[in-house]
Length: 189
Image 1 (tube, one colour):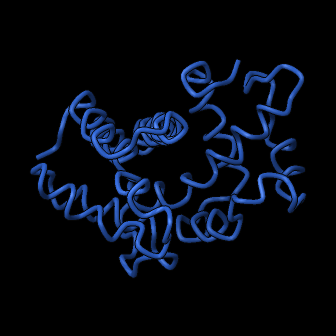
Image 2 (cartoon, rainbow, N blue to C red):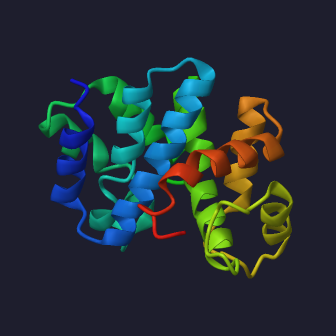
């Protein structure tokens, strides 16, 4: 089954209570929907994958090597489709799973999961506290500063861009554009 957006958020909230994690899910959902429109994907499916991708995070965050490992069980119990389960697992490829992203939806998720965090953090340190005036060059400048958003693994983002065969700057630009309309929901603006 592919749940509705509302059902996906209800399921996410059953397993995640921290509002920061919920905002991250909203950000990833927004980026996934944007890329689905751009790439001809199913916007609702891609959005639900964005919502559910970290469903097991709060249960595994003390041992990140377990992240994405508990998700299949939680999702299967809720009757979620194997397509969504595979996508959720694939965002941990080479980090905590060996499930490789194979289609556009999975490759985008793998690439933008970490990138949304970098872009949001870059927006928060701007005088405007907004993405409305954030440009790719500003993100690239922050990218080079390893002390900035040090929890964001730039190697994963670059690896994702490489497997997509898309220039990193293009992915950054599209992710900024994806997050602008929802910036209030994710704590900006």
